[in-house]
Length: 241
Image (cartoon, rainbow, N blue to C red; front, top):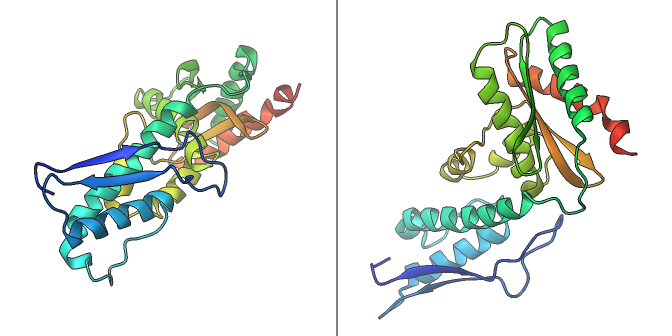
């Protein structure tokens, strides 16, 4: 695009339900002060298509692909990350007012640490509330210092990205990223405080995420996630009351 052109993202829908598509007010327009060429028109169509269906890949066989691919990839990234950013801000608000009680958060974190310890892994477990603020941090007796940050990022990821992409674990989030073009996946994974590592599990009341538990320190995120799952399961009954 020339310097006189801008991309405007307008009237994004407030929230998408499972399988729901942006409504008729959804629009992404490319404006030019003087002219619009076929490359820009096709770029606009591609961005609109991918923003509506984030899992699709740009069609490499399309007539405009070789001419516009670089610009289109950038525009796609701007569009989808723009949608993600707005949805992330909205996801960090409790819808029903439900929250994870402190005693339940402590029990979940302690269970996660003890579960990993039983397997010989010294870990840190962090519980964050729906806004991503740490509520409980428990470091195992011999857990190394970096586990504090890794456990927080896993918990933060599952409460902020989980509601957007409809996943309950950070391993599920990794599965979502695998469906995106590499450049876009890398951008999504490098959002501040977000990580593409297993080990984060959401606390849920019905379909609503109310908190997240992240575990770090095992020799593999899959093992961290087993411990986090144990912690969340331990307090599941308390959340039903």
